[in-house]
Image (cartoon, rainbow, N blue to C red; front, side, top):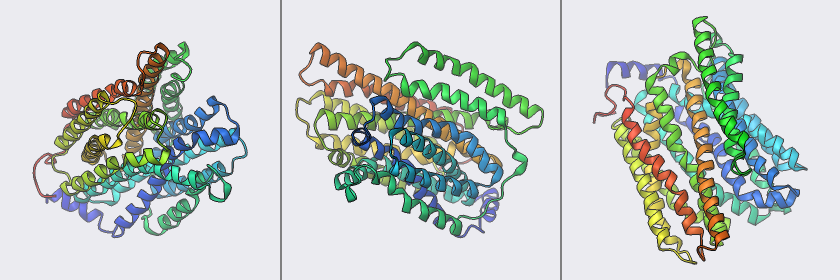
Length: 488
């Protein structure tokens, strides 16, 4: 262990309950992450129960995604200013209260408003989780801690449909879809109480200040990107959707110029210029966005393929994806043992495994007819999970490795905000490829079963994205010694 690492470890010795604190962070994060996939399973029941239009049902998902993506960056900075534990606990409380309102919503309009509030609560707590872990863990333990975040993400992605299907099928007390939100109440209350006890108090830095202009410009930029990506495909990509995407470029330029002006004047910055000029952080953020852009889109089109295309129930569809979760879990555990060693090679390998898994699924699809043997999908889904679990921990570590503690909240919020924008992009692109191909094939009568062809075309995007990630990661510069085979 180097002298610098010894000194860093010494600064973290007083967080003796850091692993319990991490468990609380993971529980709250899991509650937030799993909510997205659970809602997707329940949308048909929601529409029938509340008499909602298709556009209103889209907003049940869109309201959450937009509030979450837009709120991550400013609320991450708020944690730096007012204290990360405080903002984390307020976020968990807000998310739990909003979940209660969702479960009790008497109308679709109330549900949409409550989903927006859920997104704000999620945006409050999410950037604090990585920032708190970055501070309370010494460098030699951070790899294991970050690996557990990867496990949580993978489990949430796969267990969401399972839990949602079970809750809807159970129809607890005749409540139909409402328990998918109400189940968050005991989890949220536990997370708040446990967080008060086990997460160490972290004083904020009042000198950080609030950059109102930066918040508005960042929100505008993200809104110009996220809104058309969510709504554009459903409305047939009208001209205004492309105009909004184009307008995001000058808005982003205005944000960067504003941050530089704030720095020159010695005033607060939402995303410090020191981060924007940190090449490793910015490249790491873009690579993370590209890497995660395929995950939500893949599970969206796969769920439609399995349930609508081949008649599987939500529960059967979720069970078919269990190997992915298993792969994430196993690889994340191995990745944690490797600590900070071979970070770039692990990201490269994970990306190649994911690209290979997508190609494997495309080969399976080529041999499908009107029936589906889900066993054929199990090996490539396992490989995909292994790839994700291999790459997640070192990817976040590399992106945040050169960030000082005082900017950890902003840096974490920035990475995750771009991750959400990347996810929205992936959903839009893969959804467009999938549904457009399906409609063309069905309309023209080109194939008796157009579903395999539609999924095959949609999988072109993740193959490209993961291959590009594997190449882009070579541009990331590792912190001193992290790519060497040294003991953690």
